[in-house]
View 1 (tube, protein in one colour):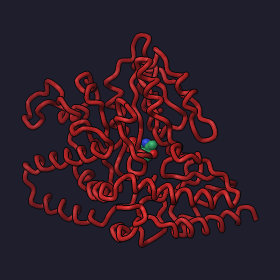
View 2 (cartoon, rainbow, N blue to C red; view 1 turned 180 degrees about the vertical axis):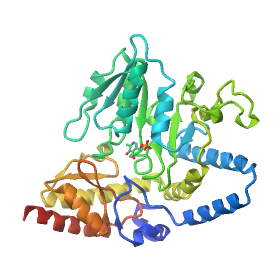
View 3 (cartoon, helix red, strand yellow; view 1 turned 135 degrees about the vertical axis):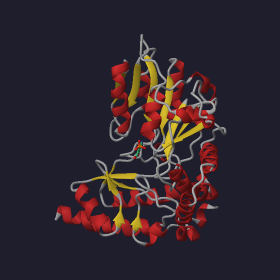
View 4 (cartoon, protein in one colour; view 1 turned 45 degrees about the horizontal axis):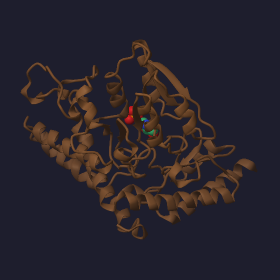
Length: 381
Ligand SMILES: Cc1ncc(COP(=O)(O)O)c(C=O)c1O
């Protein structure tokens, strides 16, 4: 689809858009109406239950994982699924040794809270956390590089920061990590689905993300693993599905050769089935068109904020920002709450965050900013 055609007829696929002005896809993306059919199908399956449904479900889950792999430039078999990113990160951390000199984990202070919380938990196994501070809503790549050395086991940084939308030059950080003999994982929850992401270009060892924001799905999170690393990974946080032949139901003796070795126990297929229509719609449009549309709408939002003298926390340069615009001004939390009450859906995480997606229109951005400025003026009156 060309960017000029967006959002066009696509809007009709998302019933939520008819109920409000929805600029909240960085938090929870709108679900397409095809999800209703998936739920009906699920109930039909359950009320006529047979155990061989698991064969169908597992192959449908694999097809979804491979569909995500294709979106991020990864080969089939390199992506594992779980319900959330926390499960993936814990499992990946459980593959690593934190003994001897090389026991440091380098993160930034812009990570989603789950990331430092998990790594702090691994301190009991020897992990030593190094937190690189941000300045004005973004992390300086040179400061991050300086924190990486021969003591670093892994660098674990967000590609797009959840609070500010700042995008990190992960390819540059990957070069520094690899030069120091360390691994690199990136949390791309805030970029995959709104920014083109290619694991070959980023050259990361692990990339995590999930469906329920920019991919218009449900609680289906994914983990990409560099294929060459797979044979070396032996997660302690594991489950029977990670075994070489899980459906043989014998004692598990070895891990699956592909990314399934990074899965756990009984999965949640419904969440994956619910996430498929959103992924297909997005891939049908094409991520380049999605990105161009996003830059157009977020640029418009920033220009309106600038004209009104509001502080834009999100970096200006297109290659340094994702799909969200973070604004900071006195009373921004109260303004967020009043906007939501009026049907202008956005969120607050330290800043007011507005996040248009490929199904939003420039007119929606304008009415949203009109309402925001009206509410903001009440704060200064
Ligand atoms: C950058 C980022 N990482 C992770 C998450 C979520 O982590 P989890 O799937 O473990 O809840 C979010 C948002 O919910 C996020 O914005």
